[in-house]
Image 1 (spheres, rainbow, N blue to C red):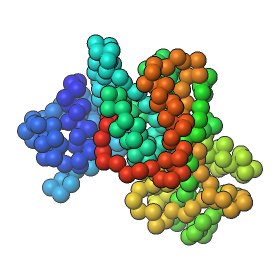
Image 2: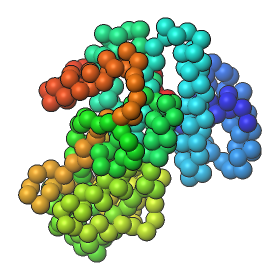
Image 3: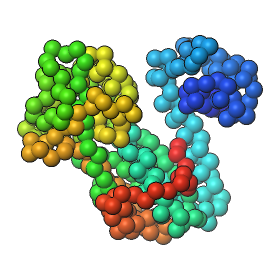
Length: 313
């Protein structure tokens, strides 16, 4: 298995097109197609279904894609670490984040800092919560953004933003599906589809329901992505609850979720970092930024910025 094969697979998954992926990777289409076929043979299954009109991930491909991306991310992370070692002047700020985090908001919030500190390279690393804790403890990342209340470790914290929640009704359920805002304690008696738990969705939902004295009835199976939760709700398998940032563009079926007192139900996200760490100067300046400047940016809406300094991994 070669990194080039994985790069090809990630590009095809992103573009849903072999020709566009080949152009992005500066390869011929036959070279890319052959590399994908070799990778599929090694992995023991088809990653993509291909017709004359479109390319889609197979269920096996959707399952394997996060692992493909993780290997590519690790390579990029290694390159950045080597650059930082060989060139101490090269300042690197490594930001971990739960898959639940609103990455578009995060990137906008970071743009003012990036413009004022062009000598600092921002590096994003999406991880599950246990991996984030391990990486923080091992000094592999400097700071992380997670749902508050589910973090585990001796971390310093400060608040970041709230993301309002939406209820995805179960199509074809035995009870009438709500068509407008619905209170958390008045949900239909339909199981809620969850993930494997590592992203923080399950724990944050459980904390929310416990705080309202409500019962969270979980579907016995687990979805591998937030899109799958939406798809399963549409198929009548169960209901879903997701933060607004993780809903697809089609929100017609999503009902705003309310607390018992009528306030919007929301997940609160915060920054965490090792409380015993002695940060370098540029990281200390970033901690000042997220505690002093970011709250006002979030309250007033993050200023628009062109895509720029942050490299997603």
